[in-house]
Structures are given as structure tokens and as C-alpha cells.
Image (cartoon, rainbow, N blue to C red):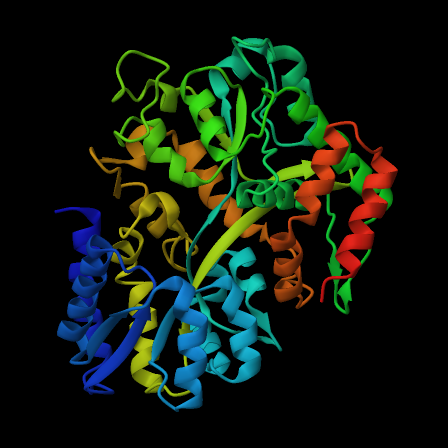
Amino acid sequence: MTIQSKLLGASALALALSALGAQADTIRFWTTEEQPDRLAKQQAMAEEFEAATGTEVEVIPVTESDLGTRATAAFAAGDLPDVIYHTLQYALPWAEAGILDTEAASEVIEDLGVDTFAPGALAMAAYEGETASVPVDGWTQMIVYRKDLFDEAGLEAPTSYAAVEAALEALHNPPEMYGFVAATKVDENFMSQVLEHVFLANGVTPVGPDGFAPLDEAKTIEVLEFYKAIAEASPPGDLYWDQSRSLYFSGNAAMIIWSPFILDELAGLRDSAPPTITDDPTSAELASKTGVVTTFSGPSNPDGAAWGDIRYFGITNDADTDAAMEFVKFSVDQGYGQTLSIAPEGKFPVRAGTMDEPNKFKDLWATLPVGVDRKAPLGDLYEASMIDEIVGGLDVAQRWGVEEGQLALASKMINSQVINRVVRQYIDGEIDAAAAVAEMNDELSKIE
């Protein structure tokens, strides 16, 4: 019997004892995980919950791009579902609008143990002394690097601007080996995402509690100089995720920035994106030579930051509250293995474990199979220290505007691609660093 099946088996008895009186006949659950295989796993978990509690869960797929408008319309009609699986961007606006029952979410978190949740995931949803929604899963952007080459050269892991620059000096030898593949394609969201990560690493943000806050010139110049260094150690052209992955997979790049959705591909488990460093596209050799860094620092922010994308379970104000709370508890406790198994490579556990077993869910997550054309657990592909790094990034995960209550404004600034454009002008030598900072501040100040 697997760890997961033991957990799920024990859950039925535990929940049956705690919920002898089922709170409702049926609750409705909106999920944006609408792919058929992912829906099937959520349906299976809903059936396990019903067997344990007598409460049926109607699993309703909602396209992610439609979620905001559908929730607003349902709220106006007094017809919200009981629970919504949603992205970070909705947590605070929905709390402010009255869509979410923040007291219920906070009670769930208290009951399960505040200290069992990743602090970064809770901080992003902090709302008036409560937590808007219950964190479910997330992922952190990573510096993916050739650990074997770093070890051979006696280099430190690329956890800081300085460590990356030292590695560029030692390893950049084009065209056989590029030190980095930086994002330089201005109209790609990938560049926006990478730049936010690099700015956060040095403690630079364009927003404050009252809205736009001018970028700090000295700190921003440090960011620009670092980004120019990695761009100059990259191939020429307009680069985005495609070239960075391809060059790393062919063994021609020492470092890239990517999402964890690369982890199964690195190990030769996806035929559509095979490693080409060897003649065997199914080989896990490149995975064995790879390290990752999630928390990354600049000279003005030695504690660093991780760029995180967190998903939540929101309990609505139209919910059958007790039943919704029990379902959410089940989904991130007894049934957490099933929740994470939907796509483990992109669903890091925001709860590493319970109060009694602090590593219970992290250890379980490492046993869940990933891959498309072939399957293998992450724990079989990567060392325990790398698993720790991957999950640990959620402890300090950040995004522009979350702490300041200005996520919506920050998102508009990112989507405007102003920062992408000006950074590209700087790295192309069209303007100097001080002029780049001034240009970004001028353009960003106009966004409302």
C-alpha cells in the first residue's frame, strides 16, 4: 500500500468520526483545473469526501479566464458556489468585495495549524488580521543550473547576483556554453515574469501602500547592471522560454530561469520537449546534473526573495459554511495527496506537514509521479536537498503589490511591458542606467 493510499484510507475514518452529522446534502466547488485527467482526480477526491461525511461535492469546471466575471455575476445573483479554487489575484479583491468569508478561511487555517502553512502563502492572502482564502498549492520560479559544472569549477550555487556573475566569468564560453539565457523578448510575458523575480531579489518594487512608488535609483541600477551582465552572457536575439529551455536541454547553457514545469521534461518524461544533451531523449542524465535555486538575492536585499504563484480555496459568503470548511480541510489535510497529485510538478505543497508530522506532505509529494509520456516520482529524479529547496521557496514567496495591497496596479504595470521595453533599451546600449530608471518611473507613474 502506498503512503498516499494509507493517508486516504485513514482519512475516511477520521472524517466519519468528526462529521457524523453531515452539514449539507450537496456543496458546489468551482475549479479552474478543467483538463479531463485533472477533473477526474478532483472528482475522485470529492467522492472520498462524500463517503466520509455524507456531503456530496459537485465539481464544476470553470475556465480560468472566465473566473472573475463568473464570480462577480454569481455574487450579484446571490448564487456563489460554496468553494472556489482561485489564483492569488482574486484573494484580496474578493475579500474586499464581500465574496469571500475570510473568517471561515482563517478558522480552517487555525484548526489545521498556522505554523504548518508556508509563511509566504499566508502573507500573500493576509486581509485585515485574517487570511482571505486557504492556501492550497503553489510554485516558485527557479534558477536552473548545471550543478555538475558548478561543482567542477568550485563555484557556489547561484543564490545571489554575485554568485551568478562569478559563474558567468567561469563558465561562459560561447557557442559551446553560454553562461545564461536571459529573457529579452519584450512582448513575451516570460520576460515580465523573469524581470519581476530579478527586481524582487534586490528589494525593488514600483508600488507602495498608496499606489505607484518611484523605483529606488541606486537599487534599480544594480538590477539593470546585473540583467545586462546575464544578457551579455546570452545568445543574441529576442529570447524567451523556448530558447532558454532548448539551449539548456542541449547542454549549451549553464543557467536559465524557468518554472518548475521543466522538472519532468528535464528527466526525459515528455516526448514533446526532450533533453538533447545525450542521444537518448528519455534519459534522466541532465536531471541528475541539475540544481535549482528558488530564493535569490541582490546586493541591497541580502535576504532575497522567491517569485511565487500561489493558488487558494476560497470559502464564499453564500456557502454552507460548515460543510465548505470541512471540504477545504479535507482537501489540504487527509486528502492532500490527491490534491497535489493533480500536477505535482506545478503544485508544491504549501503545507509541508502537520503539527505532529512536520514533513508529512513534503515527503508524500516527492513520491507522486510526474511526467506525460513516462511517469516517475520527483523524489526518484532529484536529491532530497533539491526537494527541500523547491518547497522551501514558498516560505518567502513574494509578488509585487501583494504586501502593499496594490496587486491590481502592479499587475497593470507588468502587463504594460514598460519595464521590459526600457530594460531592453538599456541592455542594447540605447540609454544609460540613470536614464532607464527615470524613463521607467515616468511611464509607470501614468498607469492607474
